[in-house]
Length: 429
Image (cartoon, rainbow, N blue to C red; front, side, top):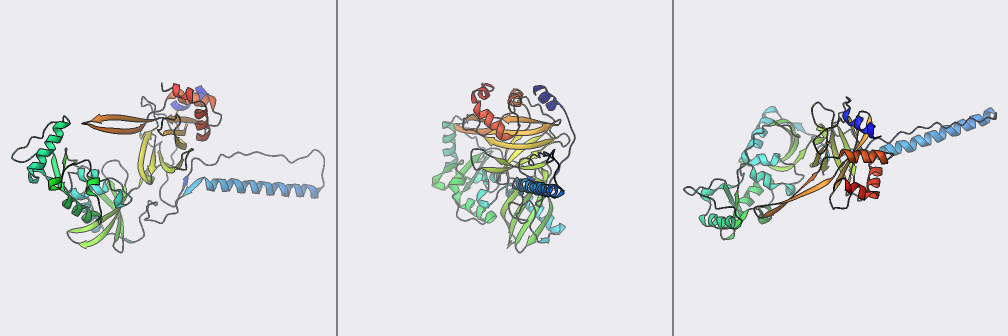
């Protein structure tokens, strides 16, 4: 088996599998394994034609019943997108009146404005899910410059910075490069104009900013993010005062579907409702990923066998991109993957971190890959940060599994690793 694994990892095949849209059936793990067996009902003794007919009829009924059960199992193992177009679970635009080319161009100009670009950069299901850090870091949208900030607030910020060993900001004629600020009232007005939300906790959203209470001022230091990613509005529809538009980007990233409300205000024509990645359209296969030891299930995008693109899987948390992992070794060696059969995750070694298990087809053979979860903890300027990632797979772990697990499905692989935890942990010690 070990030689077959090594050969499979080194081989190459060419198969193209493309799926898109909502009406398709997305595969849950892999199609149910087809096991065919022919049961001979022939008997050595001769029977009457009536008995033979009765026997044949019975066999036919058994076969049909078995096929029915198999078909039921297939249906149970297939995810079907039943959401209506335009709903969060569907990647399609809602039904409505198509937008004209001029309307699409106006929306492109609107999205490209500094204060709006951040809303189409990161996905969000509702306005309560908006990642404000990304919105505000986009050339510090919604924030003022330091030359208008009260000097007392800047002095207090410098005291804070010096206490953390960061050094004081140096200003020139009242201007401090890289220093931006907002007041609580100004930020509330900005959020209401863009999203319609009025009941927000500014301090919770801007908790990582330096806050100077006497002036209700929030200050932030850093170089603003200047986007160089051109947006194109591919198509859009209008239904009453709701607009949905599909946008693409000049860089290689998922298209998004942005939902807006028209306000009728020429100075603030739209409010943002949601922004959904259209990741399904870039997936070669979409799978439902199960956590064997909980009720958690999420979707997974598998990409492989497309030119120079590296094989990869990405977990999609509520249809938003989550943990991403290329199918590669610790040394960034990529096998030739022609199919991803199963994806599962669980804590294999009891360290409290999720581990990722993938079975894929390489050169016609099913090959298991284990990507161990890892958390990197580090300090920066007095704050502690935690970054989670899935490490590359170990070839010797793959070979160990192949030598000891008969059926290379994720359930059996997980069971074997859990039953042989010490051997598994030894690979990583």
